[in-house]
Amino acid sequence: MAAGRSKFSNKFGFIAAAAGSAVGLGNIWKFPFEVANGGGAAFVLMYLLFCFLLCFPVMVTEIAIGRKTQKNPVGAFTALGFPKWRFLGILGIIAGIFILSFYNVVAGWAFGYFVQLSLGNFDIGSQFGEYINNIGRVGAYAVVFMLATAYVVSRGISGGIEKASKILMPTLLGMIIILVFYSMTLPHAFEGIAYYLIPQFSEINFKVVYNALGQAFFSLSLGMGALITYGSYVSKKDNIISSSALITLSDAGIAFLAGLMMFPFVAYLSNGDMASVEGGPGFIFTILPGAFESIGPVVGRLVGALFFLLLAFAALTSTISLLEVPVTYAVDELKIERKYAVWFIALFIFMMGVPSLISSGDSYFFTNFITYIGNEKATSFIDFVQHVGSDTLLPLGGFLITIFTAFVWKKNNLNKEIETGYPGFKGTLIEKYIDFAISYLCPVVLGVIFLLTLLDRFFGVHMF
View 1 (spheres, one colour):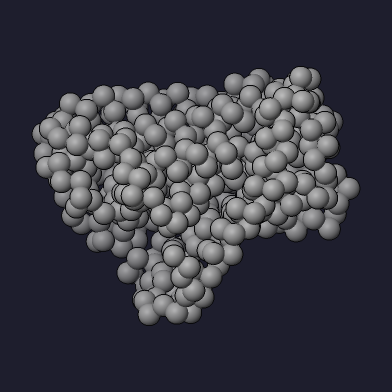
View 2 (spheres, rainbow, N blue to C red):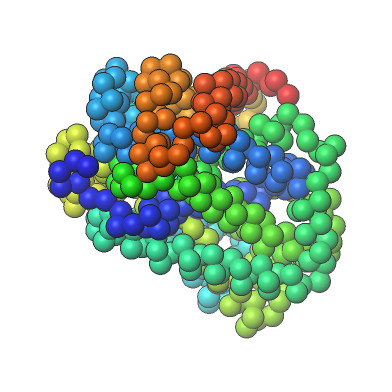
C-alpha cells in the first residue's frame, strides 16, 4: 500500500462504493426504456448474460490493476512498467468527464421532479419539454446536485465516499423494494410483469444484442477508470473475484428490480396494452407522473416523490465515482490537495455541462449541434456527449484494457494479483474462464461493438 494512501475500511465499504458507482441512472432511468425498445424480456435476458459473461471479467481486470498499482488510471500503467499505455487512463478520465457533464444535467431533472411531485405538481409529466427548458430552475437543481457530489468526494474515501455509499445503497434498495411491492398492487400489474419476465425469443436480433451489451457496459461503470480508481483503495486481503461478483450481482439485481418496479406502473397507465409502449430518454419523466396522479392526490404524491428521490439517490452514487476519477488523477499526478482538486474539477465539469443543459430547445445551436454523416436530423449536444462518452469511449476503453492485459501486461501477472486475497484461484474454472474471456471473447466482442458503434453513430453505416 502506498504510504499515506487512503483505503476502504472494509470489504463491505468497497462493495457498497463500487456497486454505487455501477448502480445509477443507467439502471433506473436508462434500463427501463432500453427494455421497452428491446421488446421486453428478450432484452433483459441478453443484458443479464452480458453482465456476467463479458463485463465481469473486465471488472476483475480493472480492480486488479488498481489494487496492484495503488494508482489512478493514468499512473497505474506507468507503475506497471508501461508508460506508453498512459493514454488509456487518460481516455478513461475523458470518458468519465464527458459522462458526468451530461449525467449531472439528467440528475438535476430527477431531483427537480422529486421537488415538483412533493408539491403535488403532477402536470410536470405533460410539461416535460417546457420543464427542461426552464434553464433557471433545472440549472439550480443541477447546481445542487453537483454541490452534493463535490461535498461527498471532498470528504475523502472512508469519511466521504464509503460513508455515503453505506447509507445511500441500503436506502436505495429499500425504496426500490417498497415501490416494487406497491406497483404490484395496481390494476394490470401482471401484464407489465409478463411483458418484462416472459421472453419472446423472436424479439432477439442483432440490435437487441448490441444495445444490451452497451447497457451492461454503461451500467457497470467499465472502461472509464472508475474501478481502477476504487481498486487502488482496496486491501490486499480482499478477494477480487468475490467482490466483483457481488458488485455485478448488485448492479444487475437493482436494474432487474427497477424494471420489476417500472413495468407494472407502465401497464397500469396503458391499461395493459404493452404493445403500445415505446422507450426513450424521457420515458420515466413523461409517463410516470400521470400514473402517480391517478393513484390519488395524497398517495400519488408520496409514491411519486419517493420514486424520484430514489432516482436522485441512484444518480448520486454514480456522480460520486465519476468525479472521484479525475480528482484522484489530480491528487496523485499533479500533487494538488484534494479539497482544491474537488471543487475546481467540479466547477469545470459543471461548466462543461452547460451546453447539455441548454440543448433541449433553449439554444438552437446546441439543440442542433451536429449532423452525422448519413443522417438528415441534427443531434443535440447532450446526445452527442452521450454518444461519444458512453456509447463510444466505454467499449473502446474495455477493448483496450483487455488487449493490454492479455498481450502486454500478460495474463499470469493478472492471476498473481488475483491470487493475493484468493490463494485457491489458480486452476479453478473461474480462472480458466477469465483467461479465455480476457484473451479472446472480450477483445473480439468489444472490438466489434466499438467499430459498429463508430460506423452506425457517426458515419451512417447501418449494419443491422
